[in-house]
Amino acid sequence: MDLGFAGSKAVVTGGSKGMGLAVAETLAAEGACVAVMARNQPALDAAVESLKAAGAPDALGISVDMSDAKSIAAGFAVVAERWGELNSLVHTIGPGDGYFEEMTDSDWDAAFTLGTMSGVRSIRAALPLLRAAEWGRIVTFSAHSIQRQNPRIVAYTASKAALASVTKNLSKSLAKDGILVNCVCPGTIVTASFTEVLKDVLAADGLDAENPYDVMRWIDSNFHQPCDLGRAGLPEEVASLTAYLASRRNGYVTGATVNVDGGSDFV
Image 1 (cartoon, rainbow, N blue to C red):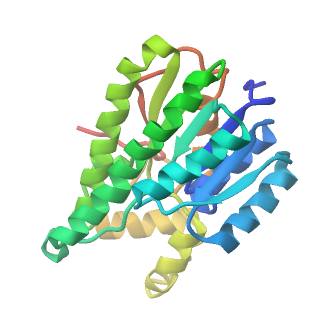
Image 2 (cartoon, rainbow, N blue to C red):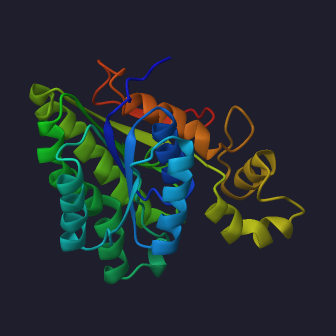
């Protein structure tokens, strides 16, 4: 299926690793010119090389601190100078986590700065570029925990719920401009950072943090939140759906909050 990305321009925030990089690589392989934004320059440089190999010779790596409004504006100014327009914005940034009793006011502020305001600021900076293009799409990343609560990630979940609400609202206000706006809610996804953080924890239970089935066994045992497919997901599985929502091919899906979680019943 041709998604209509040939010659288009895309920005992926948090695109230097994990799900963000998987999305960026998918868009590049589909023919888009892709800019990735993140803080770590070596990771950005590696991502750019990966995107070029995937099919995006005009790939950009822009160092942006997503907790800083001026840095976000400066990053999109680089995109404006380079391309003058933008077809797709995919925002994948998320904050840290913690239990309620552990969270200070500063922790809550930081969670909403990254989990909500980074999306608000990125969309605000991107809108003139999206309006300048022949077609425009916005996809934000929330989390399935907004529907399936986990006490360990209370501030993360609250900030992501707020972002999902903003996304839904924008789908209405931007419909008149022909800009489609959707939200993706990943479940448990086995990324390199997930594996690195939890490899010793899972190993203590005789499980492999790189094995999607072992990961879901650990999730079920510790949080009682299994999924119907019995395994965790992979970044490329999130990327494939995101690419469609961010594409020209998507002509009628807007205002949707889509779970990519292996099947869960939410009540």
